[in-house]
Image (tube, rainbow over all chains, first blue to last red; front, side):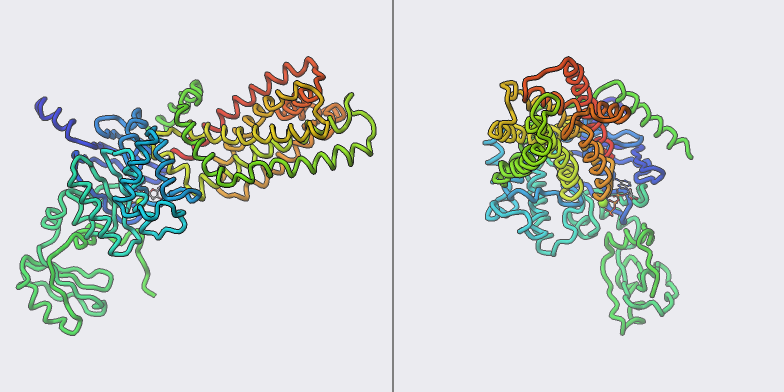
Length: 316
Length: 279
Ligand SMILES: Nc1ncnc2c1ncn2[C@@H]1O[C@H](COP(=O)(O)OP(=O)(O)OP(=O)(O)O)[C@@H](O)[C@H]1O
Ligand SMILES: [Mg+2]
């Protein structure tokens, strides 16, 4: 690697992790992972419950120190630059932690003090952000009067107060209805189109990851299973088209024709091939089960990479 | 165990030994402390009626009960002053310490566990030492405010007879730093709100030893020593001297001991909160 390449990597990387590790006792929450996030990129963390997504994000946001490995945020080592790093990161943690004793606007104003913003700046920035997330009419409401979606939007506004260069969103849309989710996506797209902000996002919604993330990693049990662009991952891991047959537990997997792969998962059959025509004859066999031929998606990749793990259920 | 996890232990041990020599006070940013303190004030201000009522009710009844009720039974002077004056210092110290205690046990636990206020704050540049110090100072502020309100009551009842009374918040501030730090340390170490019961029991029993209601001198030998080890005994004794203007040499040592305890336990409170929150 020549000198130029080295320095340009340093400059354009918002985050670089190597051998990043976090143990809780003997539990390997994050187990020696390497990845890097480019500046201005939207980067996703996927993985089942307990994979280590939140832990990784908490290390990036300097909320918890790594057990081992190296982690640089904007070129600063998290071990000795916590304060500086936190001043340029905005965080939406997995659980809301708004101040229930304060109003919507007060929540922002008080939070701005932790960033040493002056009052004028904080007041105008708060109103601007409340307008941005559509809560300006609720500025005086108490937190308990807000719906789940409103609280989540307020959390996002709060994370943007100090104009952070990096936004860390831990499952920003979990538990929200499709409208609110799409609205949040739109806000994030807007932020992105204004440029400059690097977004790290974890999610259990594959379409969300596919839609928003330029690159992502799939984690399981503290390790990275796969990484890359969503489209690449789909292309590399599964063929372009999928045939999905639900509720077919009692039927054995059909014998596979050339160019077709198949698997049985959670009582459903999945067959993959490079063209819908190859799958059509198979679909005929399941006529009464309402088979579905569709382009493969990230969910197929995810299900293929990650086995049941923590959530394995016994049939009753 | 793999070599990785051994390496990990080494890192943690190294951090600990560093902490042993460097006090957490060096990590405090006073701007950050102010920001957190103002947050608490803003929340508390919404309940401004409580501000005056809460510190008044208990001490007024305590003084009526102990000063006049018990005092009339005793009729004699205690430690050279009227029982009303004697018990005035006790009521004052008791109420103020209790305020610091509750703020840094149930209050802190509530913010830490139920409201995740600490989590929200620690996502910002504020370091955990600043947060812990701000919390302790907040408890001390409430205690100091109470001590002034109660001091007025003591003047009205005639239990404060010296001009030195105006200085009486000082030993109580030191005492509530001690209690605040100790309580925050304990709060950082429990995972269940019922665990406070034991601490409360010890706290309230020890307050009986601390010379609030009767002189430490009447205790039998061993208990007397125990009483003097508890920093609150010093706080009560100094407060009483200031209220009555009757000083003893021992109060110089008591002041030093009280400051030492305040420092040590504030430090302990800050370290404990780091241990709890930064994992
Ligand atoms: N504070 C903690 N103390 C002890 N163990 C923890 C702590 N935080 C996380 N863990 C453990 O670390 C592992 C990874 O947890 P983490 O929260 O990072 O997973 P996640 O990928 O975010 O999962 P989810 O999708 O459920 O949010 C889990 O086994 C969890 O039990
Ligand atoms: Mg998580």
